Image (cartoon, rainbow, N blue to C red; front, side, top):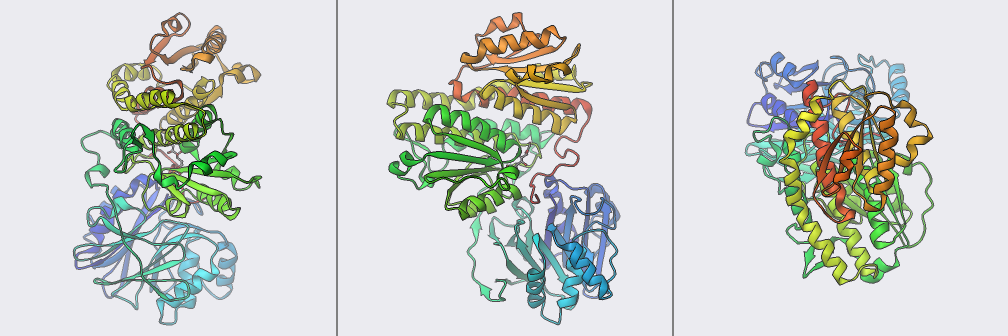
Length: 611
Ligand code: F6R
């Protein structure tokens, strides 16, 4: 969701900015722009549409000479996607220009005040107020002007700023939107996220909330909002460049689906393995057995697919460890004034670690003295840094907007937690733990097996390209799988789809079933199997075409469903990790068949840094 880049150094800035923006494309955008300072004038080019257009307009950056500049991909929030609303934005005499990721919440009030002082606005954006406000406060000292603006604006921001009077410097500042900086071989670079800088450096500085950075060709200085200089420690990024590239796959999503066995393996056994001497060891938890035994309730908080992983987590944690779990959408949790009780713990799940609602929920829990565990994929992200403990999912960089491998890794982290808690709390004995560990370790090979069967799913998907509605049904964990299967399909193929707890169909939804409606029924839970068969019969008698996803051996489903996909046998708590694979492939192939933009679906952003 919006991406910013900046470069200052010996090289031409524009090609570096364009390349950096291309690496941030996955975040989602509808327009893009760059501004480059040639020593005399800050030149700007911006355009609606894909980066390709900007590359063409600037002849791959050649028409904007200069060795310092800033760039932006915009995901429209305030003002429609137009050339004028695209960033960067100038002040009136074009001596200051800004790019912005985030939302200035009090921009209407600020705009009115600035207009009453004679400032003229050309765009409908909230960002333009920052350019004019900087102009208002700038009296020769950029850091002073920036801190004054920080005191006036409310909301979230990562800003890249050029001042004409400072031809050898770029400035940046953040609050609640991500920002990193790093050295290149001949200068310095800033960006919203790691993939944009990986080509140049693996050593990055994460800018914290309300920190300002001042970059020159050779120098990097950090300040707080009181204009005091800060010392910061760099972080080394372990991802390699290849992991963030497409590597011969047609789409990032396909590549990432194929990386799921590795993501699962690495999450079970990162550098510091989580299974040691046949026990679950999660050192990052920083909890004694006594503390684990004392937990009375868990809150799981997340958005989108991470929330769906959380719904599975509820079933697994309650089932195995017998700890009550409340699972909430972060956007609801943060405003519902939750009743925090003693001896509880919050688990915030997030791939990006930057999701605004999840971050806000985390802060709320912390403010109420609730311990927060982050299950996070992006190392050093805001949620990872603000949570009291962080359990990383080792899925590697995920570029496709629709998550696959990070989701699969989140499930593993939750299984590990549930197994650990169940054992420590005496809910399972050694023999049961060993059985679970054995099944967990078999998952990567089983996922691979399912992925290798993709042609069967592709053939099936090609028959459903014209569907108007698809329903996913399941009970218990199978309901959680249905939620994710449905989201995968709708977000990338634009086919309307819903997930329902199968027992709930009769209470309204079944009236939507018509002749030929596709219903995907998930039945991996032995205890609920018969109930699901009845639900399949109910929809089939109303004309539905039923795709069933079930465990190997359940062949009698073939009598009831129209098409059956089998998943290998595993522990009933782990079936999500397998059943989701054919559903991800189904979404992918429907989207492919329809010719949709699979990796960058319309209106969506990878990192949702605004609420
Ligand atoms: C769907 C998807 C989103 C994210 C959600 C949370 O495929 O990727 O629903 O799961 O936006 O994002 P993170 O995990 O970064 O907090």
